[in-house]
Length: 461
Length: 152
Image (cartoon, rainbow over all chains, first blue to last red):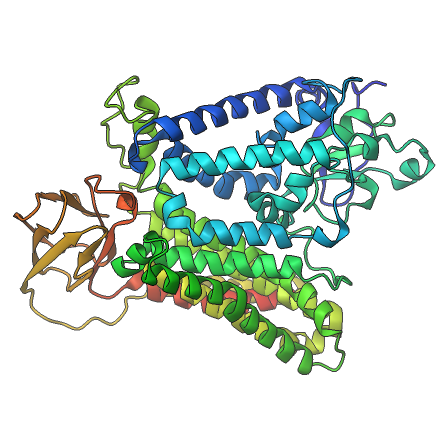
């Protein structure tokens, strides 16, 4: 098998196969670059846990808080997801130790493989557990985001859980069904301008061994990929395909969205709504001027915290889902051709994805720029012991000298709104045809506009 | 050389939307004419809030903030203004400046005061919040643009 040429491969319309670039090809087809990148992230992960446990208890002086919740979170929301979809998953350290045990080697599989490799229970499939874990972390966010010990224990628990599950269940059960980050990364990966796809499906149909499926750590069969939500971009399928028939494509944004979906699964819709609700809640708690809200979110177990928890859960699990369901009901009622309500909910939820991703980008910008100094300070004094290893422990870097953060936030919200409205109209067009599309899409357009105005008020009001 | 009619009808709405967007961005919003005055705010800082948390003034006003800490050492910086003050517990620090930049600016604590310190935030509102209103106007315009694009 050779992966040297690749010059005669054909990709679809509006696609460019990155594996055709001669300088990039060796990096894609070798396992070493990814192994090295993952080793670096794992080392950083272990260091973060140790610093979280034994460094300064003050969050803004502790590497664990600064690097997880400011540096990594910003990189995830501003670069990895919008530009690379699940690209973070390809270098994430959480599944690594379990995967090494499971494959019996660090880079390639050996015969000394450990684990039961059971199938994940059917009843627990979908995004439900990931939504639940995300909501739990959100409930305790004021502590999670500010207490280094809590952050360290959460990271430790997640990696232990990932190892345990990899020893019991096949493939990446933790990443696919439990990781609270993997859920929203997956749904938003449908927006990103990158995908792994088969070049010629006829070649795959004629290939009996299905090497790509057998070797995929995620259990994905590339021919069956309809969207990028479940592809972890590890690129193992490209490496093992004996026909060199899989491409790593650049594509237009939102390529996975806009086509009518026949599914009746509501987990993706619910996750998309929870992401919208949490962006609103976190915007109010962390960026708003209301001290009473911050203190309520922080005082876990107290009466004010119970009130905060009730409001947070009501917003995410009742209010927004009810508002969205009403919009979908009105949309369906206002058109001649209606779909079963569950399918309509699942179908229309696609339009929430750009709105959600860009709301999170806007929220992230609000603290990433003003708090940029924390990163240079933490690099120089990771344990918060008063060191200045790089001479930058006390240096204040004003990354937003011209107060651009609010303008960038508005711009991000507007991009999300535009794409969501555009998607809603496209979806309506596929269902009813152009003449009635606006009437059908109007409730969803109104939902998106109201949400955007709320976020605008919270972030720059 | 003129564009064919089909291309004209395709690009004309985008031209109109772009012009409307530029107008929303540059048209001056109505402001109430008034003389500059002085404002003194007694601001109490305690974990993790300022009280009052929202200070409203007009462009050109002379602003004095008397910052008092109720618990630990707190600071105060204003996004977009090169200002900083720190207050020891029980002591008052005075900060005086001219509100010469219009808009809404975040007040932030500049001294590590506890776990929620990075999120101890207040607001200084100088005149109209133009960014909010222009943002809302652009949102309405982009709804039209999104609908139009969907129909194309």
